[in-house]
Image (cartoon, rainbow, N blue to C red):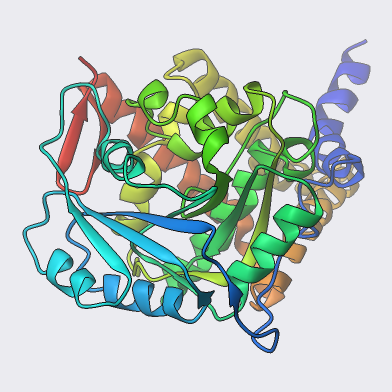
Length: 371
């Protein structure tokens, strides 16, 4: 009996990783994608209003608005200046067809981005709304491609995961894995299906029917959500609408990370929220990471289990290769996935410790307490 239990325990990492590769929804793949067609020409986009919440984004707002200018004709743009102390509003106002709305002070119980979107929504009069982060630049042709996909597939809510900048060792080590883990937590194939088990979105770029937003109660119904994109997708899906989420290299994040600290701050602000602030789930995740990433190396040291350890490591790295290939990175980065996993687990614990100390999240010079 003991030997049987020992063999089963030694098999767990291999079963986990091979099982992941064999799941029908293929969470590790990059098949859900839309890319820009710069040769398709610009079309009429007058049925869309772009809604951009912006707080101290003077460094990037000009590039974001320039990217919108290249998408097509008739596009309306509303920038909600969320109490900026820099030249965000001035730069935005210098672009044609851009309306700047001065945001009011943040009320109690609201997240900053959602409060800005709530104020901007009152000025939207078109059938569709594009929710766009102020640090997202759209490459020529991507918005018409997204609109065409939405109409062809009869979706009321479509979003694209931004291509995160990779300018340093830490960026390359951690940012493709951020998308990889997001897809494992929220399998796109299930999220894009009628099933309500999973609902996910990428908040940087969401094209949604304005009526669907209203019927879902956005944004007041999720006013305090820190993972606002997935919460919004859940609300829209629960209202009976169809959602879709994919990858794109035509939606580019302009926000520089560069350092381990900056990536840590980005992850830690919502990692414990993903677990519902549950200490039990945090411990479960810690055990799962230890089995999936640590145990294979221990198995390699034994003459009776090294094959199981090798199978687990090979399957683990195979699951990461599609993401590396999609972002045109060297496949050798897959060898560092266990180190990447350890860092993400550490950032999740850091997020939990912040919460236990009374800080639910910290972002854009604002602190959201647990009270």
